[in-house]
Image (tube, rainbow, N blue to C red; front, top):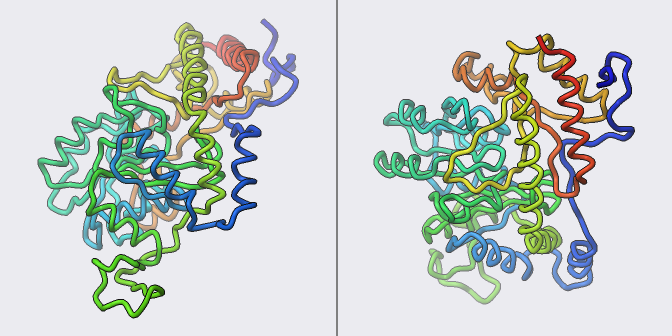
Length: 397
């Protein structure tokens, strides 16, 4: 095997391969163009069409499309009644929005440690941290693998908590044969470009609760309603509406909705290809003693959004940063998902300190996010495998 490129050898590939990339085809482009030629650019028929499609896909009774995944989390917390003085339990191995949504409502995020094998939030830690101030649990389906929904649902029901599934990574995954999106009290989706399905931006909240649904609609659009059953005064005419809550402008455009609808038509293909890549990665990396492969619970039929490779420091002469740079020299451009949320200066100023979640912190020190997306060729996949093996072998202890 050649020297690693970082040591003067030849890179495994001549052009970069990045950790994620959207896939847009002519069908997607035409879907957006057709909206641009229509009478509605926002608040039009594509929003309802997307919401129905999400319900049909997941089995949820209601869906509310919003401008992004963060907005989805925010209005889910508002609908759950999260307020000042409450606590919301979540994981630190996530994008900051999973905790920020509690802060938006005046509540305190409480960070529960992860399982060291699946990297998802540990239900036992959630139980340990639950107290009289706990209002909700925001459980993140990290990398696209479903959290242990049964255990979390049982606990939340016993304690009177609202279970919000942060499903930003999970679209296409099934839990016990049931599509994620209709199991938790509310499930949020994200349609950011690196996700399995994209709208450029965009998000959604899914629920079976009519009560939550009505609140979500209000919070999405300024707290304004045209529903006479919710009004406090008699309508003066067909133009009449009322603001009955303090909401936000979290509306999605019809262009975004059209793109997401078109992308959802390709979800079976997207899911199948991601599973193929993950299977090949797992086979290859399981044979490299210098790295760990993320484990999965048997209940989760996972469409993976991210592929996490974990290094074994005791078997390597170099650390994560050196491994990261060595892969970049081979033109395999990785990332790291995620920095523990409470490491950020904003959270430090709120009083959070390192050491809260030792398993999550250890994972962060040892992990890399490898390229994974629908349009990866078999050659791309083999290049990633070759680069990891080349570096692991050269720098082994």
